[in-house]
Image (tube, rainbow, N blue to C red; front, side, top):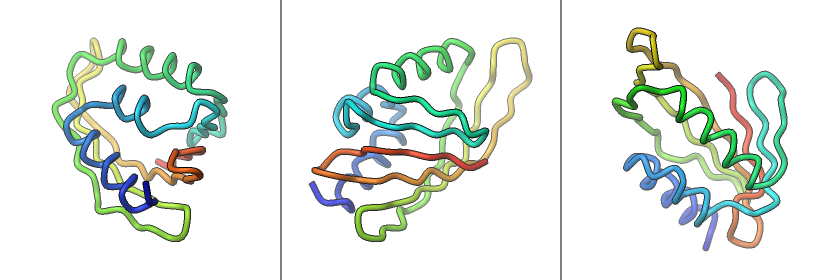
Length: 114
């Protein structure tokens, strides 16, 4: 899968709130994930655990808007606009940019900026 095809597949799955399917289908087992605070997770198992914890803190995801991808070689970026209600909190959201690197048709790294 090309970088462009992978980026568009990720966008489509995220628009449908299919985050687990996206990780299963598109991410390397050896993924390196870096959050905006500099924390780093290594491996798909660790990333899945982080996502499970995050989903457990959410009452409802009202939606997510995604930009078209910007593609440069084996990198692409996507801007996300989140609309969520966390448990015990009012409805809110945030914006972030994800930068992804692709190798052998899998996402091998992701980094987020808020």
